[in-house]
Amino acid sequence: MKILVCISHVPDTTSKINFTDGDTKFDTNGVQFVINPNDEFGLTRAMWFKEKQGASVDVINVGGAETEPTLRKALAIGADTAIRVNTPATDGFSVAKQLANVVKEGGYDLVIAGRESIDYNGGMVPGMLAAMIDANFVANCIGLEVDGTSAKAVREIDGGKETVSTSLPLVIGGQKGLVEESDLRIPNMRGIMMARKKPLNVVEPTDVSAETKSVSFEKPAPKGAVKLVEPDNLDELVNLLHNEAKVI
Amino acid sequence: MITLGFGALNFKLDNIMSILVYTESENGKFKKAALEVVSYAKAIADQMGTSVTAVAVNADNADSLGNYGASKVLSVKNDGLGKFNAKKYAAILEQAAKQEDAKVVVVSSSADSKYLAPLLAVELDAGYVSNVVEAPSSTSPFTVKRTAFTNKAFANTEITTDVKVVGLSNNSFGVIESGGSASVEDFSPSIPESGVSVESIDKATDKVSIADAEIVVSGGRGLKGPENWGMVEELAEVLGAATACSKPVSDLGWRPHSEHVGQTGKPVASNLYIAIGISGAIQHLAGINASKVKVVINTDAEAPFFKAADYGVVGDAFEVVPKLTEKLKAFKAENA
Image 1 (cartoon, each protein chain N blue to C red):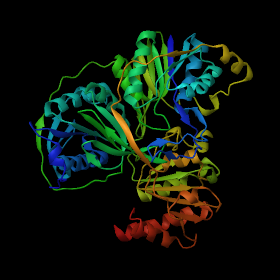
Image 2: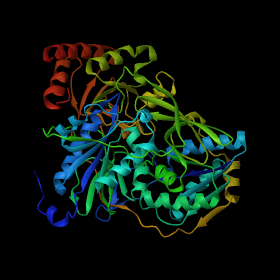
Image 3: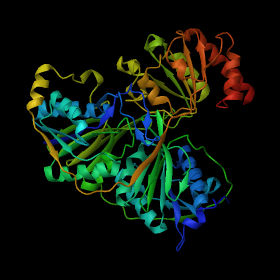
Image 4: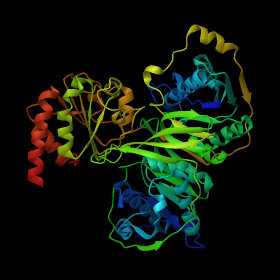
């Protein structure tokens, strides 16, 4: 089984979010970038398929050279080969289109992407990719088993979960549940040394134009200070929720 | 009808186009999010000088959508569509959009709608923006405001394609009754084969889901153990709320994973979020920040959650929560 894991290069959760150039660009100054958490669960599940079922695991990112340390980290965790499509990630559609070309040429059986990236949260790349390459698709995937060309996946739905049967070629939008937090791997020194020697192939993009563009960013209005209610005056809390916040 | 002054100049209506909206139902009954997306579609239709066509699958009382702004409902009745299938449902919407010459298709942010929207966008060659929180600031260029950076910011995003798919963030626009009426037409699109089939569904039918809930009551490690969740559930019951928990609580196995809210768990965008014994780690706040009003109950006055909350009680949850439940019971009895 040939697996491709899509890796988004995203600001660490604790990053301060600021914008520059008249609020038109994300300010990367001082921001630490990491593997998108949803993708890391998927990558870890892919390592399980590699170790237990002999799958090959490639990782891919659509982005500039600045994303390479993130791909190297994925190699240190255990992926075989990294691919970087050399173009900035402008919108979900154009990223899916670039991925589709690589998936078609590479003959991948299973593509594991995260349910969404934690920066733009679009949640559209895996579904769009599946539609473009005419593969089966499971969103919000919290469990995956593959046997030959058949697969069983669990999808998180509102208020519960659903088990589906499907087959390769398959794209999933994965998340926590594919593996647990405690299964995530911190690259060890050997992995880091090996990652330096593993191939990181830079491929040139195909000509695709974006369908959406973010013209400006804004931050939520600063929040007023919390109103504290004494624990022995909970009638006041009920009153505030009813008359002021109007939520009960 | 509200029409913006510049709207009429930008759109030449050679043929009748409409705003299409997918209205989800469960056991025949429309979900609240369905009424909200119709209300939202109506606002766009008013801006663009057109009308709203809703698509409903196996729903009863399809004409009731008129009250929220739909002029027409395409009603699909098909026993083969009893279980949701993203590819099949996307195909239904694609055919409806083409039949109605829809330039904008609106969906909700439910798990199912977010599943089908990217498939639909590709089939329609439409640009798609999800997590939208307001009516378009402009319809030409078509510009919408959406959340980004896991609720730490908003992006004003332009969709440049002819046809657009808009995913509305739940609870962001509200349900608006406009008192209109809708005609209902039978719609029988062709249904494609799908390589994904549902084997089983595991869902608590007697509980409000976090996605559908207007109020969410959430517990953290401050509650000390799973045996103490009774008071959380009682508070939730009085409020008709869903129950949720922080990541450590689900990692410890005190509560099921399906209740974990936060960045890597379920997102919450409720009207009211009550956090009990949750310190407010940044990953947790990222996932719940879209909630409108936040109440925190914690013994530690220095807990970071107090900085993110609207109302706070510094006190022992084991005393405060049961008391609050009693007060709310009395309030509900008075206001029933």
